Image (tube, rainbow, N blue to C red):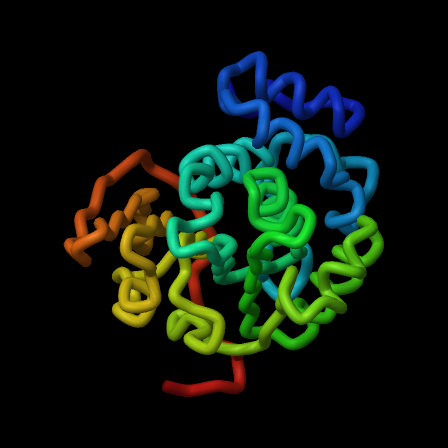
Length: 240
């Protein structure tokens, strides 16, 4: 069903995702409409296909239906917190930068950056410096240069995403865009209370897992559905 969501324009792609009930929230629809996928894929001819595409360095930009799933699953955690601060989001394996941009729009639209109120932040972590640079170019090309230049907004970091990025945590929402063998403990630790992480887990057989931490810090895991993601790995020249 998901593969039939392909369109010839970004608007048609989003419309098809809505029609197939992969997007159910007006907020998610508006955020994904605001981010033109053509600015994030190497081959513009296939920008609006509902399929993953290579972005080099053995990495991919996920299929749009998976981005829709991620946005819908994390939406409730992208609003201002009771303590008054804006939402904080961590995107591990930021890749092309597409989902960082979608999360930025969601944080702003959900109350984390309007007027003089609290401002949310989206942190994208990539282990390949060239992909960090690619994400920044793509995000700027999509009109979000001001978000990158701001002290908060979109922050891009080169590092091992399995260790998260503690300086900007804790995170209300964490998305992991590559498959981990097991759930990295550092990411669970950096998850806010309450907070939610979604992560593909496994090697040959992978499962999209939802990790929830409640207000008391109790952690639960829910297996959602089977997926196929590239593995969460080191740079080729790094050994651990």
